[in-house]
Length: 338
Image 1 (cartoon, rainbow, N blue to C red):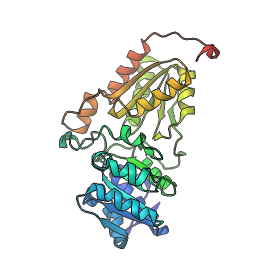
Image 2 (image 1 turned 180 degrees about the vertical axis):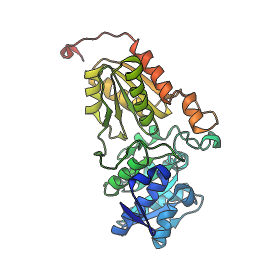
Image 3 (image 1 turned 90 degrees about the vertical axis):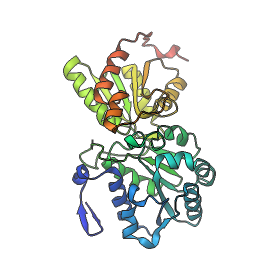
Image 4 (image 1 turned 180 degrees about the horizontal axis):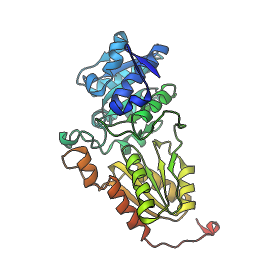
């Protein structure tokens, strides 16, 4: 339970709060115990909900104006003095408009700047391509020293924010805009940076997902068991970097079919990170990715966009059935693999 700005809330209230509101409340809570925490925004405090921290600790909040490059540069400077900066802006601006500053000012110096990027993926819906962000995971995971996390919901966002506070290097947490439905019921499920969580057991195929794909993948696995009698494993790969190689390779060895689900371009994100691990292992499996097919998203309500690109439970079920029909040489003797 948390005490924030005169109100008491528990994780059970997550159904009535957005992930960014939960982030703002958790950050305010953490700042009560740690005076090193400072908050920064590029004139988007209310939209990113860091305004909750601002109201709690106005003397430790800094608005740099509509200047995302300065946001990252100032955050880097503060980190050099021993502070723990939390910089909040939209994902599209954090990963692209301020890309050079994140790389050179923050990651190159391995500074403990925590970038909380809201409105990720297609969650801004009708705002269109300029405010969608389906390239950020590819960009951020390519930077040395950067930790990249995509929480499944508000509860996991709370766990991620707490976990990165004392991380010695930079971190990028990508969350959505609105009322993405919650998946977890409590915070006590064993969140660890770099460790995937198995949320549905299975032996026929493994779905590896992050963000909004976690709930949809779980629902798809549940429905496939009822309708098709399939045993589908689902992994919540909330940390894209460092990625959980052990969980991926166990899935390859035990199910031999891997499907990734992400609200991102199919190039460079979760699917590519998983494919890298599989290719380096020399193990064979049937493999497919769900995401944006190397294109810019059309405009519309987020829920309609998820259905359009096959990121909802129905789309995932269809992809699972298709992948199960893919033939490949199954060899139980792994010793002759590369």
